[in-house]
Image (cartoon, rainbow, N blue to C red; front, side):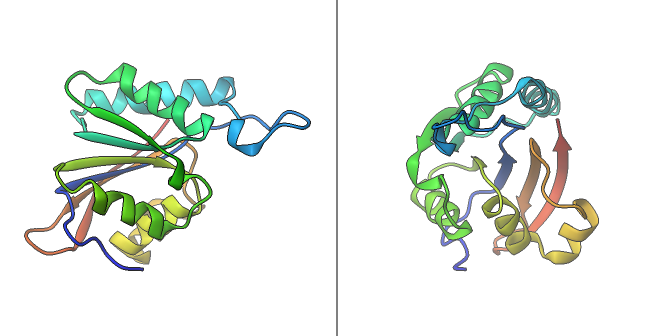
Length: 165
């Protein structure tokens, strides 16, 4: 995977909260958060806001469960954060998330709201498997939020925090 050409100072990686199953004849894209997912999303967004985590830009998959998770973030934070819903992040590999970040390099902090396995793969690429295994040994949980800071002028990343709703 190509690493970021001009990375932001901070990246937030948020996996959508717990969703229900698709309705018979329904599309996966249209799945909504279930009640637990609504609570998870509100909890992780509230805790992020309490800790002062306010990205300049939120890039979210346009799938309904990601939109609803991003909307919980929007309700929880104050300020000038921009929200954009990106079709290319639905059912996409981690490389697509990197490309989305590279297209929005004017922001010093960006939150990606998306799906597994791409979120977990990007997390592993940026911080390494040792950090992944210590932080999320059973996999990237729904409503899991990794806060990554860029180390100096390089493209190395460190895990600042990991929140779960």
